[in-house]
Length: 243
Image (tube, rainbow, N blue to C red; front, side):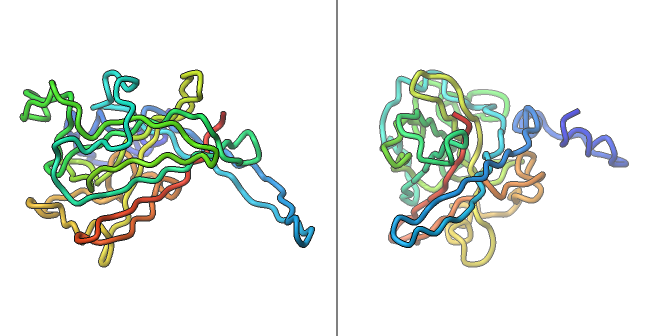
């Protein structure tokens, strides 16, 4: 039984959740695996061991990109307004001593400042119809350092979810390696506090600890976010995947 659902079965007087929150929960529980590696300093000859934990698997829905190969681009902003954000994702291969994974395909997508996704809407959980546009979605290929970089805006939020970015990683042949999500640091002094939910603020915001996806742990999914509303923000995260 899925860990999240198992825990819920132990709760007394559990309250039913909305369709959107249910759709955003984990499809399955994946226990991160750890690969121990030994590295040697070529100058001193010393060796050290380091862990390489595979990032958690998360749900791809409910707003995955319909045709990700059609949006190979680094600037995914399109016509969306918001605080500029550079997204740096480094992908490592947990099956190869945690070395950088070059040639991997990385798709990302996230909501706009108002909490809306492109390619969806007009009914149900998103009333605004954006079915014919493709903002804030894109694909890049990792370089020799395992890095991809996107130009975007700081994501907004919507009911039931903390601010997040969806990520789907494939190998160079197009075989899926990992579907996951990126969480944002919270609290005083963070980028989230600086943006403060854009115009709608953070009233009613769902924090990571009670988010339907992140509530069972998000340490490996938590990005580092620096910058300001005037200079823009830079997000950085490393993801280890089995390739």
